[in-house]
Image 1 (cartoon, rainbow, N blue to C red):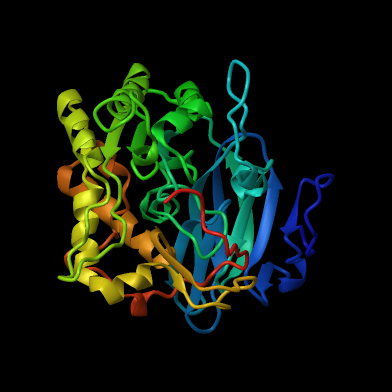
Image 2 (cartoon, one colour):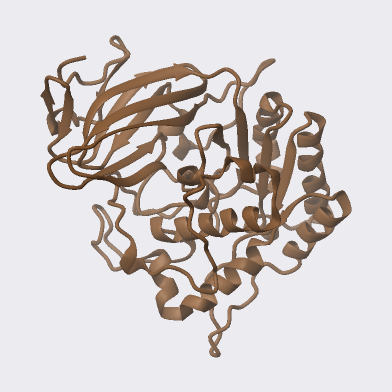
Length: 392
């Protein structure tokens, strides 16, 4: 390709979302006049290695790459007049299930980039792109994510979740397949056939990370509750992974941001975190206690600073946002990245086997001494949604 060809289904590749006008072609690639620039390639379901060659300018240049529904893959700086080649692994999927049928998508998901028939790259940096090579990888270790709105790939700004930021900390020897969705409980996740879909794809050596609780606790009925259906389903999810000789990891739900007058977090999850801990102990499953870790994290920030990690913005901050956003459950990109760092640090601390897939350049992280948003520089994507995700 040597011109800014818009994406078409007939061609099967090209610049997407009307961003072909934002690129300028040179003899050895294209530069970005205005970010972001989207480039899509029609691909069937599967895992792909995407190798991209970048070229810096006369001064330091940023390399920022997101994939599909805003999964952060690269965020780095290259030196003056430097070339930089990097491979990232990207999962492309459809609702279809091996053996027949398909998972049930929510109406809002129908337009998400995770569920279309193409692989989409979003370039936000200033480095020139010299080449893009997409290669299918039929055999690769996968990390499957099952969870709710605090885990899912949030398709639109300013919402974000740790599942779409953990990707930046992994090597190109593992791929993330995030099946979490907003509003999910264990029972609705199973009912939508997502557990069945994951089970059809799991293989020996894969991982299944499981985090639920926010929406489960709202379910009422004689068989509902942390020690009844919730516990039963947690065990079923664990057994689904083990049946395929994959490795399950349980996570307690992240905290909601509710402080008391003494600057301490109020517990809003009841006995659900204890139920996760109990299943992990009974079934000898690795446990990442995000409830405990995020309690430390939010209290370390305090009431005011912690607001900067959540979707809390005055009216008219984003296009189409006519009222203030004051969400105490859902993260912005900065907050989602901090939660991802909490997960990463706990994997390292416990020596959970998937530690071998972590980049060796990740700095040590302590939730008692979290980062500050003043150090956060990732630019926003240009696709926005003023309505909060399902779930609370």
